[in-house]
Amino acid sequence: MISRSGPLFGVEKGGALELPYEPWWQEGLFFSCIGCGRCCRGEPGSVWLSPGELEAVAEYLGMESEAFRKGFVVERRGRMSLRERPNWDCVMYQGESARCGIYSVRPLQCRLFPFWPSILRTRRGWVERSSECPGMDRGRFWSAEEIAALLAKSPFPDL
Ligand code: SF4
Image (cartoon, rainbow, N blue to C red; front, side, top):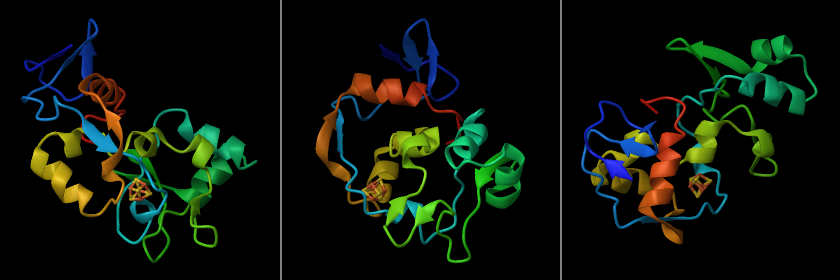
């Protein structure tokens, strides 16, 4: 169930997602990632690590958490984010294979894209982002209930 009375995005109370806006996506949306990697490279951006993700990625890479943090993580706005290369590619993006190097343990932020609170708040936000992501508005159908469930998982209300 989705209601409109809540003060925050993606907050679930008693099984209901409360939103501060009328969800324009009530009829559902289409999205299937085609693995082009455009969202992983070429532009400045933050890839926030949720609690426990730094350790999970470090373990996947066979590194000590502290060594991983020093080498691959920066602090931004009080949160940990994966570093970018000088060309703005995510440090985990593998140019040779055009794939994410930590795909199976990628951060929740990446798993939830494009069903982020900031993108879903307005139809315009979705349309603008879809001009950069060829997977949006095509492929799998996502119902309003599925979208609400993804919104409720958002690790940060300002994502
Ligand atoms: S830009 Fe869209 S289609 Fe391309 S990798 Fe990212 S999510 Fe997938």
